[in-house]
Length: 379
Ligand SMILES: Cc1ncc(COP(=O)(O)O)c(C=O)c1O
Image (cartoon, rainbow, N blue to C red; front, side, top):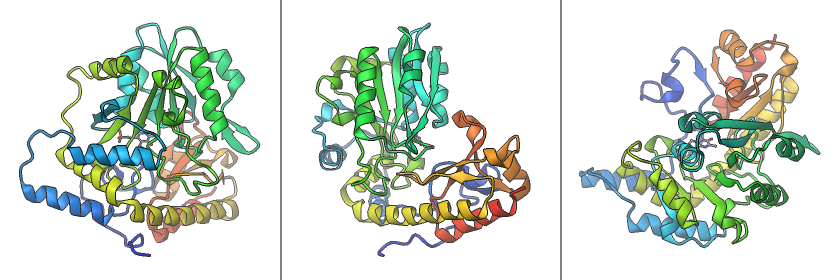
């Protein structure tokens, strides 16, 4: 082990959402980790800070080169720089897609449970939202193709995909992604694929990531792929993401939808992103190993110590989607807030109120403290 994933770093009082929003609670909610970012990223930030001038920024050549290499080597896609749209975060891209490609009376479609902004961006565009639940297929989360066929309408224009899936932790296999692409072609939908968790897959041989960028050339005309190093290298607070949009007309509409609503992108974030992609791989590998150990410990703990709760081992990321139906309480997140002093993510915001989401992106000792509090508050 070359990197430190055990030290408890005090985050309270640093102006962080996770700890400082509800200081009276012990937080395992929002999706950032309690680890310091990779040393290579901190060094790049220090160097940029030393320069001392923080005027308006644009992506420098080094970042564009690092992204193009990353997309080629890790995602198996050859992407010209012109296809990349830099953004100050990924959620704005979901909103831009809804606003760029849907008019009043039209709809975006997605599958639930899902990261809450997927269920909110249609409001930005004043359009409808069509939701279909994910289902278990042979014990693995998948799509309910029949329900999707029943739900989709001729007014549906965009499908929002989350892969790897937050909160299910599922990496959808090739046949699912290809079938979804076929669904989008049949119904003339633009596929917006949020892949922000794709570098947090535990076993890439068993569950390889199939990116929107890996679909056929024909499909590239209707695909928008959203990526960011922010979840993996714990730099979400710097605000940076990018869209890859091969189709010129889609890209123009997408960027035009920004209007005057988005600020310039944080000058530091560009340098952090470059360092993540160029030098962050050794840290990432150790991180994923540690997260996998946490996941295994958590699954065993919930199964053996927490009657009424159940959880499936996810394929990726540091979020556990815990089914609390068996507890028989009306609002599980509130139950653990009141009885354990925990701040967990309430499944209701993801579309499934009987679930809670637990963030295990933290030192093992800290995760165990949180789990013990859950166990002690089982009614
Ligand atoms: C699936 C998914 N997309 C997007 C985001 C947030 O992206 P950003 O902070 O860049 O807007 C998150 C954060 O948890 C996420 O889980």
